[in-house]
Each structure stands twice: as C-alpha cells, then as structure tokens.
Length: 308
Image (cartoon, rainbow, N blue to C red):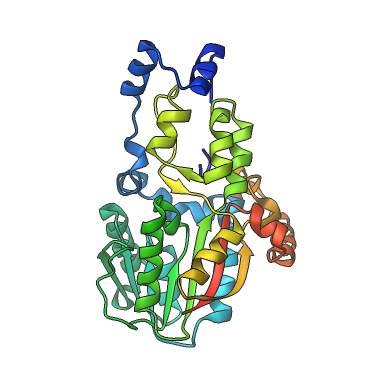
C-alpha cells in the first residue's frame, strides 16, 4: 500500500461466507505480519524516513505545506515538542530557525538518526531526542509553546481509545492557546491506491468503512499475501480528524490537504527527475487549492492547525 489483493474465485467466495479451508489456514499461519508493528517498521525503514520528504514530488509538497503553516502559526520563539518526529526532519528545520526542540519517537533507530541529523546540521544544542510513547508523554503539564505531531504518527494508533489518549497528552503538555499541528494519513487517497492494485481490492469495502489497516484487517482481507506491505494505520477522513480534535478540546483553525491535487501522482514522481519550473508550477497550484474541502479529503496527508 503506498502510505497503505490477488484472489481466487473460490477464495473470495469463502471469505464472503466466512468459510476457511485447510489451505487457507496454512496461508494465514505463514503470513508475515511483522511490518504491522510501527516501531519495528520504522526501525527497519531507517534513513528512508529522513529522505522521503525530498525524494518525491509528494514528499516535497508535504514538507512545503507543513512548514508553510508552521511559519504562519508558530510563536516567534520558544520550546516546541516534535511528537513522533521520526528521523528529525521537522526538528532540524525548527532548530535552524531558533526554536528549542524536544523530539520524541517510539523507534530507537529513528531517535538515533534524529540525533545524528541534529549534529550534522549543527543544531544538536537545540534538539533533545527521547524515546517515548505519544500516549504517555514524559513531560509536565503546559510544558511547550507549540506542539507538532506531523507526518502521520497519530495514524499509527489504530485503536480509537489510544488515539484519544495521545490527543489528550498533546493537549496536556501544550500551553493554553498554543498552536498544535497534527497531520494524519488520508483515507480516500489510500482507497484509490487499493483500487489500483488488484491484490488489495478485497479490502476496499472494509477500508472505506473503518479506515483501519491492522493485523485483523490483514488476516481477514489479505490472507493471500505473504506480508501486507505497510505498517498498521488508521486512515482519516478530514471531517473525522476535525471531530476527534474538537472532542479532545482543541479549537481547529484550518484543515490542509498537503499533497492536494498531486495526491498519489506526486508520490510516484522522483523530485530529481522534474524540472524546477515544473515543481514550482505544481506547488503553486497546490498552494491555491489545499484548503478546498474536497482537496483536503483526497490528500495523502491531512494537516490540522489547532489551538490547545
């Protein structure tokens, strides 16, 4: 799945009737679901998490859109939490602009990379990296002047109660009225990718309804695959993201479709293969449409800008 089937006629019918054969049981037992653990997935993903935001047109648009809204809503200075910050792309960007940044992530490997990238870019004195869980942040109440949870870490909490706990934690550590930036992975873009790949088509109806891609989903709908192809995620609709943030006590000021009209297409175009004028033309068009409600809902990543 891009940022997330081959079925036989009889297999599809058995699935629909809830029946299983001995062969199906063998296939299910053999299925490798290890990539569905986000911590393990990002440990193995390694440097690609740093590189992805400049590797493709889609990554460029995600980064450009996110940083545009950071620049617009961040205070002039202060302490910023980069929650689920991965390899530190945003932490480094923030530190280069004078902010004092604390990055947390569950992946040991991503934390190692974030420390190395902070040193490489000369901002290690302004970036602290800790392993921590979004659901239990090791910080005092109202600790940060701004909170970032960008790139989709909230999407990796597939259980609704865990997402609620994480949002409560983000609000707890943010100072009153401070800006909070949350981006998640979009459901409609993922559904479009599933439809494009015949081996994932059996999961389309369930994904359209629930948006959740986890071990249960893989066993029920993708048992014919040796491994599911991406890590566990809950893919959001735009209205759903706004609703859960408001339920957590946030005041949502903007919803942004980061890849916008280049959703899915941009993720398949290497940035190095495109002329700068072409990149700027697409970026300009995306800028003009990225808050259009339809465009927001179709993006690979949906950014919410809120206040604690």
